Length: 143
Image (cartoon, rainbow, N blue to C red):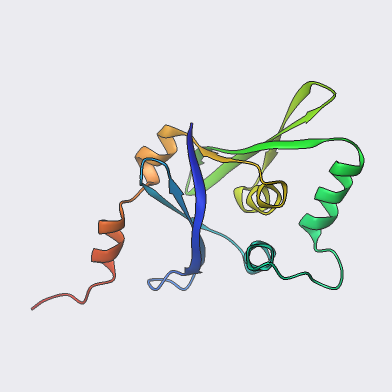
């Protein structure tokens, strides 16, 4: 597993999908398509905004905290048929629990808990891209 962090968020110019860009410690980038609500949940927290009422991830994180459950990490473990699969690793009273999750939901919780985001090396081999590849995609073709 390779540690990663959220590098940025935006719109894929090719198809208009919302993406979150994860940057792994090995400098590969992993673009993950996410929904509008998930984008909002991540962006609001990263910007430091405090919504007047808790968002879904805030509610879930606050509930986990109240129950004494710690978010240890988010792991992005698989890419299958174009879909990333993740799991949250939680700890309560010395026991670890793994819960299947969408990576976007896991990211929203991990950033609230200051928990690491890890990406499986196999996922990075298949879907990771370099910054140079992304920069080339944004260039205008030369005649």
